[in-house]
Length: 197
Image (cartoon, rainbow, N blue to C red; front, side):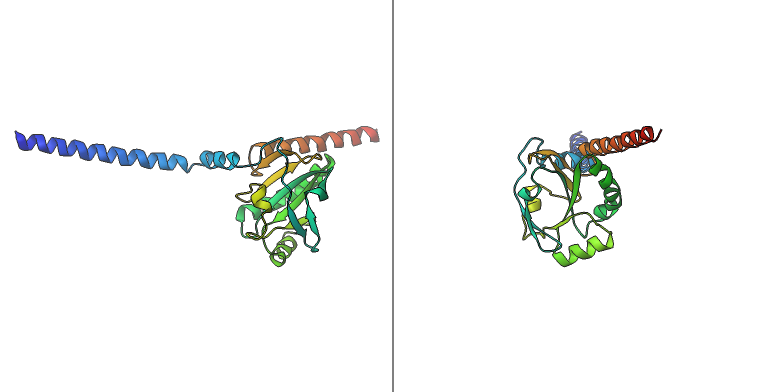
């Protein structure tokens, strides 16, 4: 009888350890879901109403700029890197959205996190005619100050220098902004049609 009892106890412990390993695997898998990654992206961003941090960057023409350069204007800083495939995929849509945002008095400014030569080549490759700032990592802390821990990301600042939205341009607040810009464009089209009548 004793050997049977020992065998049952050993089997029970094997089952308990196996169950524990399965549970840990499931927890690990859940922590790697897009929802979990999205939560971590939104937790570390600048918050609405927060004063935008000052920064120093330069344009492709080597002009130094800082936050004061954009005082009184509503700006979307779009942080991208030259080796980022999601950035490359997002650029055509961002370039399409820029004129709609401009109708709402919102200016797009690309912040390329690379050396000037790479940034210039990247802007040329994607035909970016909007303003471009160069903030190479790790030498420039612009992205760090704006908590841009991944690319693409954005930060919308109002004319008073306060953060209105920040995060990933394919999530949450960005989608609301885009919907507003598209609605503005449609209402402008309606007004233009009425004026023609």
